[in-house]
Length: 406
Image: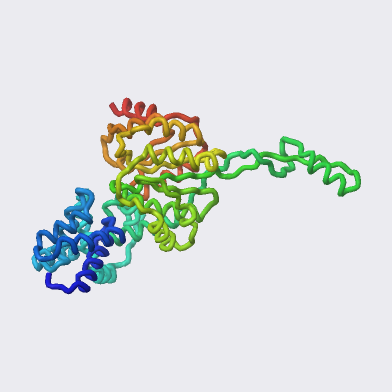
Protein backbone atom coordinates (compact mmCIF):
# COMPACT_ATOMS: atom_id res chain seq x y z
CA UNK A 1 0.00 0.00 0.00
CA UNK A 2 3.01 2.30 -0.31
CA UNK A 3 2.06 4.15 -3.45
CA UNK A 4 2.31 7.69 -4.66
CA UNK A 5 -0.94 9.41 -5.59
CA UNK A 6 -0.28 8.99 -9.28
CA UNK A 7 0.49 5.30 -8.95
CA UNK A 8 -2.53 4.74 -6.70
CA UNK A 9 -4.84 6.38 -9.24
CA UNK A 10 -3.42 4.23 -12.04
CA UNK A 11 -3.76 1.10 -9.92
CA UNK A 12 -7.37 1.92 -9.06
CA UNK A 13 -8.13 2.27 -12.77
CA UNK A 14 -6.45 -1.05 -13.55
CA UNK A 15 -8.31 -2.70 -10.66
CA UNK A 16 -11.65 -1.40 -11.95
CA UNK A 17 -10.78 -2.57 -15.47
CA UNK A 18 -10.01 -6.06 -14.14
CA UNK A 19 -13.35 -6.18 -12.29
CA UNK A 20 -15.20 -5.05 -15.42
CA UNK A 21 -13.44 -7.68 -17.53
CA UNK A 22 -14.37 -10.31 -14.95
CA UNK A 23 -18.04 -9.40 -15.30
CA UNK A 24 -18.81 -6.73 -12.69
CA UNK A 25 -20.68 -3.64 -13.99
CA UNK A 26 -17.94 -1.12 -13.18
CA UNK A 27 -18.16 1.93 -15.42
CA UNK A 28 -16.32 5.28 -15.51
CA UNK A 29 -18.76 6.79 -13.02
CA UNK A 30 -17.98 4.17 -10.40
CA UNK A 31 -14.24 4.62 -10.96
CA UNK A 32 -14.56 8.37 -10.32
CA UNK A 33 -16.63 7.68 -7.18
CA UNK A 34 -14.05 5.14 -5.97
CA UNK A 35 -11.19 7.62 -6.41
CA UNK A 36 -13.13 10.32 -4.52
CA UNK A 37 -14.00 7.88 -1.72
CA UNK A 38 -10.40 6.69 -1.32
CA UNK A 39 -9.18 10.29 -1.19
CA UNK A 40 -11.70 11.02 1.58
CA UNK A 41 -11.00 7.92 3.68
CA UNK A 42 -7.29 7.54 3.01
CA UNK A 43 -5.12 4.44 2.58
CA UNK A 44 -3.51 4.18 6.00
CA UNK A 45 -5.65 1.19 7.03
CA UNK A 46 -6.09 -1.83 4.74
CA UNK A 47 -9.54 -2.73 6.11
CA UNK A 48 -10.82 0.81 5.56
CA UNK A 49 -9.40 0.74 2.02
CA UNK A 50 -11.11 -2.63 1.35
CA UNK A 51 -14.55 -1.57 2.59
CA UNK A 52 -14.34 1.80 0.87
CA UNK A 53 -13.88 0.16 -2.51
CA UNK A 54 -16.45 -2.52 -1.61
CA UNK A 55 -19.09 0.13 -0.82
CA UNK A 56 -18.60 1.82 -4.20
CA UNK A 57 -17.98 -1.08 -6.57
CA UNK A 58 -20.27 -3.82 -5.21
CA UNK A 59 -24.06 -3.51 -5.45
CA UNK A 60 -25.22 -7.15 -5.45
CA UNK A 61 -24.56 -10.03 -3.01
CA UNK A 62 -23.28 -12.35 -5.76
CA UNK A 63 -20.53 -9.84 -6.58
CA UNK A 64 -18.93 -10.00 -3.13
CA UNK A 65 -16.90 -13.16 -3.76
CA UNK A 66 -15.41 -11.94 -7.03
CA UNK A 67 -14.55 -8.56 -5.47
CA UNK A 68 -12.94 -10.16 -2.42
CA UNK A 69 -10.78 -12.43 -4.55
CA UNK A 70 -9.88 -9.65 -6.95
CA UNK A 71 -8.94 -7.26 -4.13
CA UNK A 72 -6.57 -9.66 -2.40
CA UNK A 73 -5.03 -10.81 -5.67
CA UNK A 74 -4.60 -7.37 -7.16
CA UNK A 75 -3.27 -5.71 -4.02
CA UNK A 76 -0.48 -8.26 -3.58
CA UNK A 77 -1.66 -11.10 -1.35
CA UNK A 78 0.70 -14.02 -2.28
CA UNK A 79 -1.45 -16.86 -0.89
CA UNK A 80 -4.60 -15.90 -2.76
CA UNK A 81 -2.57 -15.09 -5.85
CA UNK A 82 -1.41 -18.72 -5.99
CA UNK A 83 -4.99 -19.91 -5.52
CA UNK A 84 -6.19 -17.72 -8.39
CA UNK A 85 -3.36 -18.94 -10.59
CA UNK A 86 -4.51 -22.47 -9.85
CA UNK A 87 -7.90 -21.70 -11.35
CA UNK A 88 -6.27 -21.43 -14.77
CA UNK A 89 -4.50 -24.79 -14.62
CA UNK A 90 -7.29 -27.41 -14.97
CA UNK A 91 -7.97 -28.41 -18.55
CA UNK A 92 -10.94 -30.74 -18.02
CA UNK A 93 -14.58 -29.67 -18.12
CA UNK A 94 -17.01 -31.22 -15.63
CA UNK A 95 -20.45 -31.93 -17.04
CA UNK A 96 -22.22 -31.23 -13.75
CA UNK A 97 -23.94 -27.89 -13.20
CA UNK A 98 -21.40 -25.22 -12.41
CA UNK A 99 -21.73 -22.96 -9.37
CA UNK A 100 -22.14 -19.30 -10.45
CA UNK A 101 -19.43 -18.32 -7.95
CA UNK A 102 -17.00 -20.69 -9.69
CA UNK A 103 -17.85 -19.15 -13.05
CA UNK A 104 -17.16 -15.66 -11.70
CA UNK A 105 -13.85 -16.79 -10.21
CA UNK A 106 -12.90 -18.33 -13.56
CA UNK A 107 -13.66 -15.03 -15.33
CA UNK A 108 -11.55 -13.22 -12.72
CA UNK A 109 -8.62 -15.53 -13.40
CA UNK A 110 -8.90 -14.85 -17.11
CA UNK A 111 -9.19 -11.10 -16.50
CA UNK A 112 -6.11 -10.94 -14.27
CA UNK A 113 -4.02 -13.42 -16.30
CA UNK A 114 -5.00 -13.04 -19.98
CA UNK A 115 -1.69 -14.44 -21.20
CA UNK A 116 -2.40 -17.75 -19.50
CA UNK A 117 -5.73 -18.02 -21.25
CA UNK A 118 -4.09 -17.35 -24.62
CA UNK A 119 -1.41 -19.99 -24.04
CA UNK A 120 -4.03 -22.55 -23.08
CA UNK A 121 -6.03 -21.67 -26.19
CA UNK A 122 -2.95 -22.19 -28.37
CA UNK A 123 -2.13 -25.53 -26.77
CA UNK A 124 -5.62 -26.94 -27.20
CA UNK A 125 -6.34 -29.14 -30.18
CA UNK A 126 -8.84 -27.89 -32.76
CA UNK A 127 -12.36 -28.86 -31.78
CA UNK A 128 -13.91 -31.72 -33.72
CA UNK A 129 -17.66 -32.16 -34.05
CA UNK A 130 -18.83 -35.77 -34.00
CA UNK A 131 -22.03 -36.79 -35.71
CA UNK A 132 -22.78 -39.96 -33.72
CA UNK A 133 -25.22 -41.17 -31.10
CA UNK A 134 -24.59 -40.18 -27.47
CA UNK A 135 -22.04 -37.51 -28.45
CA UNK A 136 -22.18 -33.74 -28.68
CA UNK A 137 -19.89 -30.92 -29.76
CA UNK A 138 -18.63 -27.85 -27.92
CA UNK A 139 -21.04 -25.82 -30.01
CA UNK A 140 -23.99 -27.75 -28.58
CA UNK A 141 -22.65 -27.19 -25.08
CA UNK A 142 -22.34 -23.48 -25.78
CA UNK A 143 -25.94 -23.29 -27.04
CA UNK A 144 -27.29 -24.63 -23.76
CA UNK A 145 -24.95 -22.77 -21.41
CA UNK A 146 -26.30 -19.93 -19.30
CA UNK A 147 -24.84 -16.53 -20.26
CA UNK A 148 -24.15 -15.78 -16.58
CA UNK A 149 -21.89 -18.84 -16.23
CA UNK A 150 -19.80 -18.36 -19.35
CA UNK A 151 -16.11 -17.62 -19.23
CA UNK A 152 -14.67 -14.70 -21.18
CA UNK A 153 -13.71 -16.96 -24.09
CA UNK A 154 -17.17 -18.56 -24.13
CA UNK A 155 -18.83 -15.13 -24.02
CA UNK A 156 -16.76 -14.06 -27.03
CA UNK A 157 -17.88 -17.16 -28.94
CA UNK A 158 -21.49 -16.55 -27.91
CA UNK A 159 -21.34 -12.94 -29.15
CA UNK A 160 -19.92 -14.15 -32.47
CA UNK A 161 -22.78 -16.64 -32.78
CA UNK A 162 -25.33 -13.94 -31.92
CA UNK A 163 -23.91 -11.70 -34.65
CA UNK A 164 -24.81 -14.42 -37.17
CA UNK A 165 -28.43 -14.73 -36.03
CA UNK A 166 -31.13 -13.40 -38.33
CA UNK A 167 -34.72 -12.53 -37.51
CA UNK A 168 -37.02 -13.47 -40.46
CA UNK A 169 -40.25 -12.15 -38.90
CA UNK A 170 -43.24 -13.18 -40.99
CA UNK A 171 -44.62 -10.52 -43.33
CA UNK A 172 -48.06 -9.13 -42.52
CA UNK A 173 -50.43 -7.13 -44.77
CA UNK A 174 -50.29 -3.35 -44.48
CA UNK A 175 -52.79 -0.63 -45.36
CA UNK A 176 -50.82 0.29 -48.49
CA UNK A 177 -51.12 -1.47 -51.87
CA UNK A 178 -48.60 -2.61 -54.45
CA UNK A 179 -49.11 -3.37 -58.19
CA UNK A 180 -50.09 -6.99 -58.74
CA UNK A 181 -51.30 -8.47 -62.07
CA UNK A 182 -53.36 -11.05 -60.21
CA UNK A 183 -54.52 -8.76 -57.43
CA UNK A 184 -58.10 -8.85 -56.15
CA UNK A 185 -58.66 -5.08 -56.38
CA UNK A 186 -58.71 -2.85 -59.45
CA UNK A 187 -56.29 0.08 -59.51
CA UNK A 188 -58.26 2.80 -61.32
CA UNK A 189 -55.56 5.44 -61.10
CA UNK A 190 -52.95 3.16 -62.70
CA UNK A 191 -55.54 2.06 -65.29
CA UNK A 192 -56.33 5.66 -66.43
CA UNK A 193 -52.65 6.59 -66.57
CA UNK A 194 -51.90 3.56 -68.74
CA UNK A 195 -54.85 4.45 -71.01
CA UNK A 196 -53.50 7.98 -71.52
CA UNK A 197 -50.06 6.66 -72.41
CA UNK A 198 -51.44 4.12 -74.88
CA UNK A 199 -53.83 6.47 -76.67
CA UNK A 200 -57.11 5.22 -75.23
CA UNK A 201 -56.52 1.47 -75.00
CA UNK A 202 -57.71 0.31 -71.61
CA UNK A 203 -55.99 -2.51 -69.73
CA UNK A 204 -57.36 -3.00 -66.26
CA UNK A 205 -54.57 -2.69 -63.69
CA UNK A 206 -54.83 -4.51 -60.39
CA UNK A 207 -53.26 -4.26 -56.98
CA UNK A 208 -53.05 -6.20 -53.72
CA UNK A 209 -52.16 -5.26 -50.13
CA UNK A 210 -48.48 -4.73 -49.60
CA UNK A 211 -46.81 -7.12 -47.15
CA UNK A 212 -43.80 -6.36 -44.95
CA UNK A 213 -42.47 -7.39 -41.52
CA UNK A 214 -44.16 -5.56 -38.63
CA UNK A 215 -42.14 -3.09 -36.58
CA UNK A 216 -40.20 -4.58 -33.68
CA UNK A 217 -39.94 -2.65 -30.40
CA UNK A 218 -37.59 -3.88 -27.66
CA UNK A 219 -37.75 -2.68 -24.05
CA UNK A 220 -34.68 -4.07 -22.24
CA UNK A 221 -34.10 -3.94 -18.48
CA UNK A 222 -30.53 -2.87 -17.56
CA UNK A 223 -30.88 -2.95 -13.76
CA UNK A 224 -28.34 -4.65 -11.51
CA UNK A 225 -30.14 -8.00 -11.54
CA UNK A 226 -30.14 -8.01 -15.35
CA UNK A 227 -26.67 -6.59 -16.07
CA UNK A 228 -25.03 -9.82 -17.32
CA UNK A 229 -27.94 -10.65 -19.64
CA UNK A 230 -28.72 -7.14 -20.88
CA UNK A 231 -25.23 -6.71 -22.37
CA UNK A 232 -25.64 -9.93 -24.35
CA UNK A 233 -29.12 -8.88 -25.51
CA UNK A 234 -27.69 -5.60 -26.82
CA UNK A 235 -25.39 -7.63 -29.08
CA UNK A 236 -28.48 -9.49 -30.32
CA UNK A 237 -30.38 -6.24 -30.92
CA UNK A 238 -27.40 -4.77 -32.78
CA UNK A 239 -27.48 -7.77 -35.13
CA UNK A 240 -31.25 -7.45 -35.65
CA UNK A 241 -31.14 -3.67 -36.13
CA UNK A 242 -28.56 -3.94 -38.89
CA UNK A 243 -30.43 -6.81 -40.58
CA UNK A 244 -33.86 -5.21 -41.13
CA UNK A 245 -35.71 -1.91 -40.88
CA UNK A 246 -38.18 -0.59 -38.30
CA UNK A 247 -36.44 -1.95 -35.21
CA UNK A 248 -36.63 0.34 -32.17
CA UNK A 249 -34.71 -0.40 -28.98
CA UNK A 250 -35.10 1.15 -25.53
CA UNK A 251 -33.32 0.39 -22.27
CA UNK A 252 -34.65 1.18 -18.84
CA UNK A 253 -33.69 1.01 -15.19
CA UNK A 254 -34.96 3.97 -13.25
CA UNK A 255 -35.56 5.92 -16.50
CA UNK A 256 -36.24 5.17 -20.17
CA UNK A 257 -33.57 5.77 -22.83
CA UNK A 258 -33.83 5.23 -26.57
CA UNK A 259 -30.68 3.71 -28.14
CA UNK A 260 -31.95 2.92 -31.65
CA UNK A 261 -29.67 5.32 -33.51
CA UNK A 262 -26.56 4.09 -31.65
CA UNK A 263 -27.22 0.44 -32.59
CA UNK A 264 -27.34 1.37 -36.28
CA UNK A 265 -23.55 1.69 -36.35
CA UNK A 266 -22.12 -1.29 -38.23
CA UNK A 267 -19.28 -1.72 -35.72
CA UNK A 268 -20.76 -3.41 -32.64
CA UNK A 269 -18.00 -2.16 -30.32
CA UNK A 270 -18.54 1.44 -31.42
CA UNK A 271 -22.30 1.02 -31.09
CA UNK A 272 -22.13 -0.33 -27.54
CA UNK A 273 -19.62 2.36 -26.58
CA UNK A 274 -22.09 5.03 -27.72
CA UNK A 275 -24.85 3.27 -25.76
CA UNK A 276 -22.72 3.22 -22.61
CA UNK A 277 -22.13 6.97 -22.95
CA UNK A 278 -25.83 7.73 -23.44
CA UNK A 279 -27.23 5.59 -20.61
CA UNK A 280 -26.70 6.83 -17.06
CA UNK A 281 -28.66 4.26 -15.00
CA UNK A 282 -26.72 1.04 -15.66
CA UNK A 283 -26.97 -1.60 -12.93
CA UNK A 284 -29.20 0.43 -10.66
CA UNK A 285 -32.78 -0.08 -9.52
CA UNK A 286 -35.82 -0.88 -11.66
CA UNK A 287 -39.00 1.17 -12.06
CA UNK A 288 -40.87 -0.89 -14.63
CA UNK A 289 -44.23 0.83 -14.26
CA UNK A 290 -42.73 4.31 -14.53
CA UNK A 291 -40.63 3.43 -17.61
CA UNK A 292 -43.45 1.59 -19.43
CA UNK A 293 -45.71 4.55 -18.69
CA UNK A 294 -43.13 6.94 -20.15
CA UNK A 295 -42.96 4.81 -23.30
CA UNK A 296 -46.77 4.81 -23.58
CA UNK A 297 -46.95 8.59 -23.30
CA UNK A 298 -44.03 9.61 -25.51
CA UNK A 299 -43.38 6.81 -28.01
CA UNK A 300 -46.23 4.33 -28.39
CA UNK A 301 -48.35 6.35 -30.83
CA UNK A 302 -45.55 6.80 -33.38
CA UNK A 303 -44.07 3.28 -33.07
CA UNK A 304 -46.98 0.96 -32.33
CA UNK A 305 -49.47 2.37 -34.85
CA UNK A 306 -48.60 -0.20 -37.54
CA UNK A 307 -49.08 -3.39 -35.54
CA UNK A 308 -45.68 -3.65 -33.88
CA UNK A 309 -44.41 -6.65 -31.92
CA UNK A 310 -43.05 -5.69 -28.49
CA UNK A 311 -40.32 -7.64 -26.68
CA UNK A 312 -40.18 -6.81 -22.97
CA UNK A 313 -36.91 -8.16 -21.50
CA UNK A 314 -36.93 -8.02 -17.71
CA UNK A 315 -36.93 -10.25 -14.65
CA UNK A 316 -40.00 -8.43 -13.28
CA UNK A 317 -38.30 -7.34 -10.03
CA UNK A 318 -39.74 -3.85 -9.56
CA UNK A 319 -38.46 -1.36 -7.00
CA UNK A 320 -41.90 0.29 -6.84
CA UNK A 321 -43.60 -3.06 -5.98
CA UNK A 322 -45.75 -2.93 -9.12
CA UNK A 323 -47.28 0.50 -8.44
CA UNK A 324 -49.23 1.55 -11.56
CA UNK A 325 -47.71 -1.31 -13.54
CA UNK A 326 -50.96 -3.14 -14.34
CA UNK A 327 -52.53 -0.05 -15.94
CA UNK A 328 -49.46 0.71 -18.07
CA UNK A 329 -49.08 -2.93 -19.16
CA UNK A 330 -52.76 -3.03 -20.14
CA UNK A 331 -52.29 0.06 -22.32
CA UNK A 332 -49.13 -1.35 -23.91
CA UNK A 333 -50.87 -4.67 -24.60
CA UNK A 334 -53.81 -2.96 -26.31
CA UNK A 335 -51.51 -0.83 -28.49
CA UNK A 336 -49.35 -3.56 -30.08
CA UNK A 337 -49.93 -6.62 -32.22
CA UNK A 338 -48.16 -8.96 -29.80
CA UNK A 339 -46.47 -8.49 -26.41
CA UNK A 340 -43.79 -11.05 -25.49
CA UNK A 341 -42.18 -11.07 -22.06
CA UNK A 342 -38.66 -12.55 -21.95
CA UNK A 343 -37.52 -13.43 -18.44
CA UNK A 344 -34.14 -15.03 -17.58
CA UNK A 345 -35.60 -16.34 -14.29
CA UNK A 346 -37.61 -18.90 -16.25
CA UNK A 347 -34.41 -20.96 -16.55
CA UNK A 348 -35.06 -22.21 -13.02
CA UNK A 349 -37.29 -25.24 -12.60
CA UNK A 350 -40.32 -24.56 -10.44
CA UNK A 351 -40.22 -20.82 -11.07
CA UNK A 352 -43.41 -19.01 -10.12
CA UNK A 353 -44.24 -15.30 -10.63
CA UNK A 354 -44.77 -14.42 -6.98
CA UNK A 355 -43.59 -10.80 -6.77
CA UNK A 356 -46.17 -8.03 -7.06
CA UNK A 357 -44.55 -6.70 -10.23
CA UNK A 358 -44.67 -10.08 -11.97
CA UNK A 359 -48.28 -10.68 -10.99
CA UNK A 360 -49.24 -7.26 -12.31
CA UNK A 361 -47.58 -8.00 -15.68
CA UNK A 362 -48.71 -11.57 -16.33
CA UNK A 363 -52.35 -10.90 -17.40
CA UNK A 364 -51.27 -8.50 -20.14
CA UNK A 365 -48.60 -10.43 -22.08
CA UNK A 366 -49.28 -12.78 -24.98
CA UNK A 367 -46.25 -14.99 -24.47
CA UNK A 368 -43.91 -15.66 -21.54
CA UNK A 369 -40.53 -17.17 -22.46
CA UNK A 370 -37.06 -17.75 -21.00
CA UNK A 371 -34.08 -16.01 -22.54
CA UNK A 372 -30.77 -16.95 -20.93
CA UNK A 373 -28.70 -18.79 -23.56
CA UNK A 374 -28.18 -19.16 -27.31
CA UNK A 375 -30.78 -21.89 -27.58
CA UNK A 376 -33.47 -19.67 -26.08
CA UNK A 377 -32.60 -16.89 -28.57
CA UNK A 378 -32.91 -19.33 -31.46
CA UNK A 379 -36.29 -20.49 -30.11
CA UNK A 380 -37.40 -16.86 -29.91
CA UNK A 381 -36.52 -16.37 -33.59
CA UNK A 382 -38.59 -19.43 -34.50
CA UNK A 383 -41.55 -18.12 -32.51
CA UNK A 384 -41.41 -14.69 -34.15
CA UNK A 385 -41.08 -16.23 -37.60
CA UNK A 386 -44.09 -18.54 -37.19
CA UNK A 387 -47.61 -17.50 -38.28
CA UNK A 388 -49.28 -15.37 -35.65
CA UNK A 389 -51.60 -17.47 -33.53
CA UNK A 390 -54.82 -16.26 -31.97
CA UNK A 391 -54.02 -13.70 -29.34
CA UNK A 392 -54.20 -14.88 -25.75
CA UNK A 393 -52.66 -14.08 -22.40
CA UNK A 394 -49.60 -15.74 -20.94
CA UNK A 395 -51.34 -16.00 -17.58
CA UNK A 396 -53.93 -18.47 -18.91
CA UNK A 397 -51.26 -20.43 -20.81
CA UNK A 398 -49.11 -20.51 -17.68
CA UNK A 399 -52.05 -21.81 -15.64
CA UNK A 400 -52.76 -24.56 -18.19
CA UNK A 401 -49.12 -25.68 -18.20
CA UNK A 402 -49.07 -25.79 -14.40
CA UNK A 403 -52.27 -27.87 -14.35
CA UNK A 404 -50.83 -30.33 -16.87
CA UNK A 405 -47.61 -30.64 -14.88
CA UNK A 406 -49.61 -31.27 -11.69
